[in-house]
View 1 (cartoon, helix red, strand yellow):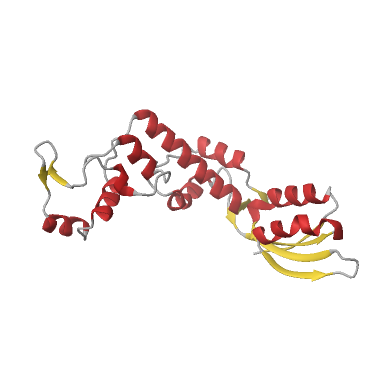
View 2 (cartoon, rainbow, N blue to C red):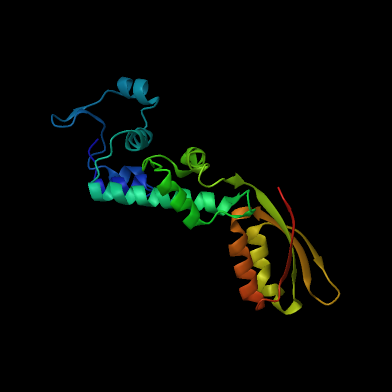
Length: 212
């Protein structure tokens, strides 16, 4: 296929959604220099379909993408940050039950000399990364349940946050305050506490009920 390199890069990195926009010619070629179009039978055999969008998608994601060294380095850095974020937001260090922060995950990956595939989905690489850094930084993926009590004058500012993190139950108190139970990935504890403390000027009450 003949593609615009910048657009192809944007598509593979998820910044562009319409795959056919990357093509300079809406054809799959047997020999691009000679302008020889590939047969439908061959496309069906290799890709399982003759649909142009599907074929181009497979070629871009599984083939050799014509990108510059600078673009590849940028893709690698973006994918590395995605993996770090996934691990940090969803895990704890089982030795302390404290969140495995992004900085600790990043440092462990550097120490373990973890290699990242810029073309592979971040979620698909997490398991392998966790295995490689486990000797340096033990990782446990778990959810946590926290009971919170929000003062009456702060409920409106906090309710959406409770829903976003995973509101499981709520109980309205006689004084107008709200007692709620939330459940979310344990690595997001600090973010949760920061948002509620900011919204309530530090007057929120919290208690960890259990990990899960």
